[in-house]
Every structure is written in C-alpha cells, then in structure tokens.
Amino acid sequence: MSNSSSITHFLLLPFPGTRQLQLLHFCLFLAIYLAALLGNGLIITTIAWDHHLHTPMYFFLLNLALLDMGSISITVPKSMANSLGNTRDISYTGCAAQVFFVFFLLTAEFSLLTTMSYDRYVAICRPLPYETLLGSRVCLHMAAAVWACGFLYALLHTANTFSLPLCQGNVVDHFFCEMPQILKLSCSTSYLREVWLILVSSCLFFVCFVLIVVSYVQIFRAVLRIPSQQGRHKAFATCLPHLAVVSLFITTGSIAYLKPFSISSPSLDMVVSVLYSVVPPAVNPLIYSLRNQELKAALSQLVP
Image (spheres, helix red, strand yellow):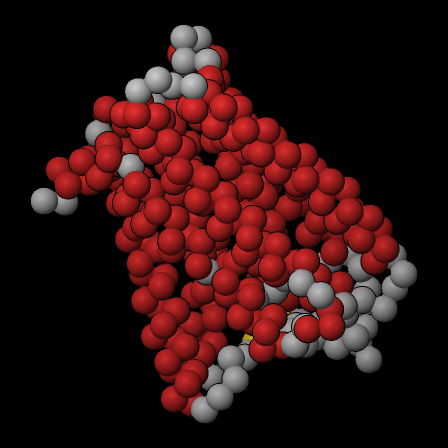
C-alpha cells in the first residue's frame, strides 16, 4: 500500500496483444493523429486566410479546430510512445497534466458547441439583428468565456482529485490518465466531495444540452416556415455539420460515462475511451469540409 506522497509515476493500461499488435496500434494511432492535425490545421489556416470566412460561425469553428487539435494531442502521443517503447509509465506530473487538459479541452468544447448552436439560432431565427447580437467584440467575449470556463473547471477538478490520498496502488485502468480512474486509487472517504462535484457538473452539462436542443427546435421550426425549397436547403446546410458534431460528441461521451457497470471490462473501456477521445477530433474536420460549400470552396483555393 502506498500514499500519494510516495507515488512518482502511474502505470497506464497497455493495449493487449503481441509486440506486432502494439506496433499496429502505434501505426493506427499515428495515422489518426496526423489526419486530425492535418484536417484541423487546414480548417484553421483556411479560415484565417480567407477574409470571406471572417464571420461568427467560422470564428467559432476555428476555436473548435484548436480545441480538437489540443484534445487529441494530450492523449494520443503518449500512448504511441508507450506502445513504441513497450512501456506503461507516465510520471505523476504528466498524469496530472493529462487530467487537467482533458477536462479543460472537453469542457471548453462542449461549451463552444453550445455557443455555436446559439450562433445558428440567431442567424436563422433572428437574422436582422444578427450583426448586433454577434458582433466581433461579442464573439471574442464569448470565446474567452468558453476557454476561461474550461480552464477554471479543469483546475478545480484536478486540484481536488490530486489532493486526495492515493493508497490503492498506481495502476490506472485506462490508456490515459482519467479522473474517475484516479479516484479508484483513493482510500479516503473525501473522494465523495469529488463525486458531488461531478454531480453538480453533470447538471451544468445537462443545462448546456437542453440549450442546444431548444436552439435546434426553434431552428427547425423557422426553417420549415421558409417558403422556398432552396432556402430551406441552404439553412439546413449551415446547421447540419454542427448538429452532426454535437451528436458525435454527446453520443461517444454518453457511451463512455453512462454505460452499465455490468458490461464494463478493461478491453471494452479502452475501445469506448478511444471512441470518445480520439475519433471526434479526427472526424470533425471531415464533417465540416464535406457539408459546408463555402469552406470547401475556400479549401480548394488554398489547396489546388
């Protein structure tokens, strides 16, 4: 038995199988990681380069691409390095950093997706005062609030989690350091304060989810009242990529955190964690580039 003061490193859950399978995992993660960096990097570069895309919708999309690049860079490179080096180690500081940045980026991303749904609501349901309601200064303040909320939320959770005494060893049943897995190592009833914090956070996330649903109910009602089929198609085209990204984010997160304990196993947990932490950052650029004609046109000019 050990306590948190004597823990200098943690042992992550390795990808099972032979050495060949570990190298295959490295190559697969490398391909996904490079695709995510390339896709999100192209979106960031295109939006920054093309002045026609300097609108609130694309400003928030640029922030989403930044968050996706950050979130996949926190977990995947370390997992690849461990597979390549046939090790499981991660330092205590590195583990704390992973917990912090995972919370920071995922919280900021969900807050940003909520903000983006408000942008689509104003654009379609209240187009006349759109420039007033979502001017450049307002957008900057909203983006700053998104990043600040993610930072404060992550700081609170990380400080609270790593202040707990850890006496159940140092083996983390995950391919990266995740807060629920760290809590399993605690031997103190003080972990209940973190559980209550998670419950309060869940309520806040539920509020964001309700705001997204309400926004899209109003959007669909407004779109269906548009008389021309071409107008309806154009309105739907601006909303469907965001709706697809929201659905992917919520679905993968729900599978990861709401699945029954009775079907939980290390292998299944690893697959699910890959699904929600690795897939969305790689797929989001594809969703936006395929469904958004303006972005496709700007990309074709940037990359002939």
